[in-house]
Each structure stands twice: as structure tokens, then as C-alpha cells.
Length: 136
Image 1 (tube, helix red, strand yellow):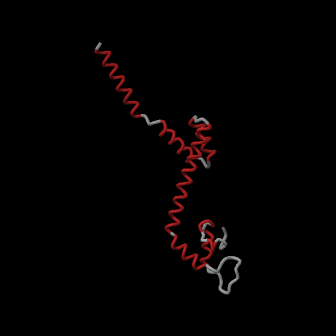
Image 2 (cartoon, helix red, strand yellow):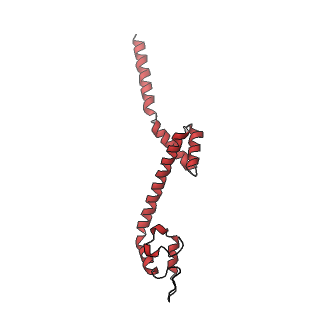
């Protein structure tokens, strides 16, 4: 009788230990989404990867891929905003230097070479007075 009880206790201990070392399924699925999004170019590629490699249901894969894309877009936007804030003083100086030198406006003074810096500034980030300056 003691042997049976000891065996049951041992089996329960091993089962509990095994359960503790397994990752939760949500964490596993999150890693699968991250892996597939890293090797895919777009959301459709992520969906295809999740369905084929990890046996996800297509509807769940689409939702997870869409949420991952939103997360990546938010991260990229936050990084771009941070970089813009860091260099904002330089951009303000460029705007002040280029006022009156917009493309299509004839002036007596030549357009400074630094006004071409606006070619790299997204139109949405330009001050309203300079949105026509450069290509956008």
C-alpha cells in the first residue's frame, strides 16, 4: 500500500513539475506571431506563415497579424517622433532660413542650398508656410 501511495505522489510531483516548466500557450502564440512577422514582408505573409507553419486558424492568424502590424507601426511612429523632436531645433532654423524662397516664388535673392533640406522632411511635418517648399 505504501508503494502505491509513494508512486502516486511521485507521479503527481513529476506532472506538476512538467506543468510548471511549460510556457503558457499565450506566450508561445505571441512568439509564433513575432517570428512570422519577422520573416514576412507584410501582414498577408504573416498570416500565411502562421497558418502553414504553426497550424493557426485563418481568422485567428489574420487578427494576430493585424494587431502585430499595428504594434510595429506604433513603434516606428514613436521612434520617428523621437528623432524629429531631437532635431526639431535644426528644422526650425532651416524653416526660418528658407522663408520667402519657396519653389515657384521669384525673388531677388537666390534660393539657399539649405532649402533643399526640405526635400527630406515629410510634408505633414513641415510648418504650414513651407509645405510648398521642396518636393513632398
